[in-house]
Length: 494
Ligand SMILES: Nc1ncnc2c1ncn2[C@@H]1O[C@H](COP(=O)(O)OP(=O)(O)OP(=O)(O)O)[C@@H](O)[C@H]1O
Ligand SMILES: [Mg+2]
Image 1 (cartoon, rainbow, N blue to C red):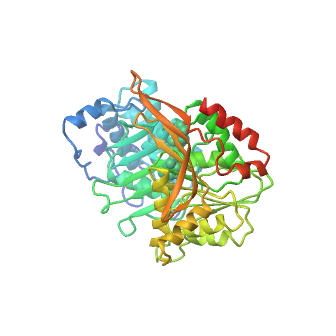
Image 2: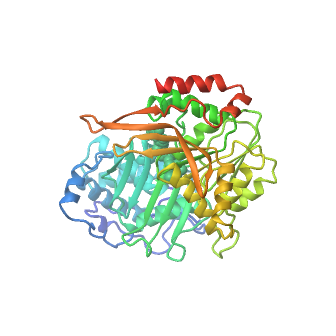
Image 3: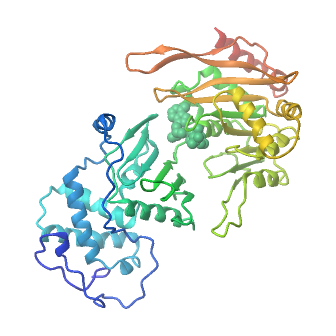
């Protein structure tokens, strides 16, 4: 059978170790071994002992999310069968097959091993095992069932034995685990090699993307002490829209109308928030208010935005190669954008000296440009922009930088992930001007938390602060949206 070593399975082998390895040269094919990154690891290193072994960990394990109902016995059986499969199969030949035929081949052999070893399992268990083993050899192994679930927003792997997921804003430990750190490293390598990168001891940090667009970060040993740490921000095929945000209570309907006016009237906007607070989602929603005849250029580290406008150019940064060359930074992209006749520039995440270029773009005729950044409040967001510019080595007095900020940014929208896991827009704030050395801001909308319900969910309300005429009133008027703006603000203050 193609993809299988010629040496027949000995019958009946009683343990994984007794499956005979064929003698050298006993393979069916004379073809050179194809370069494959699908080689599963069969490291004999035992999994490291769990790091935390205290009452807290006990409690956490009781709350473990069950993915596929795999127990301890299942993992033991799987390891035995998997080892027998690796002894039987010729991986270099397997790599010549297309995925479907390779899966078919693996299923045949695994079924054979199960019957030879007389493993008793139900049809459903056997099917789950077959699927798991195919995933291990051909796909992303234990990650596959998690990647298939649309309700998971993040997958966080802390070494082979601890896999966490975020569902509905809450982080849970799962019972998913890797055979050992070797298998985990193999899967990390498989992921990053798809985009021509590698991760190993020599280059232990790597950003990558799954074919479905999910954002991946790997940090491998020796930097990560207890085995590779793999973080995946799952790509949501159906991105949340502003109506979804309203339905979730992330923003009130009136607040959403104000955001729509901000997006439509080409008001320069900064979206600020903590990690995973929904900044990119919100930015994506804001871009939906852009007119379809505008030329929009997006700059991102990993393309996440899904703009609907036909006239969009998507740009992505590039890390340096192994020789440390060829890096294209966010600043390079933003600077280049200015030569591309953009009407709006959208920066996925501002985190360095590109802040200066974005501000320049904002006040040199690219109105309605937007960007996100990590900060815990609108005020802090403005301070961060200032420090990014200072650290970029521009040598400008802070008064000048602040004036530049005030002249460029009109509105800061603050997103937050609250302690109950919900995401809320907590502030819509205008940047008004400077008074002496201080930047003056004015909140239009705030989220007022009033308490917690019996289930621990945070209860609160989005409230207008009573400002009837925001500073961008004239701009709204210019776009014929002033009545709508007045209506939304009136309704929100009732
Ligand atoms: N208002 C919301 N309600 C519910 N889920 C949300 C909301 N906004 C975002 N999410 C979900 O939260 C996850 C994180 O969102 P997003 O990528 O927008 O966060 P982020 O702030 O950009 O994160 P990072 O700091 O990592 O870039 C996604 O799975 C997204 O679908
Ligand atoms: Mg983001």
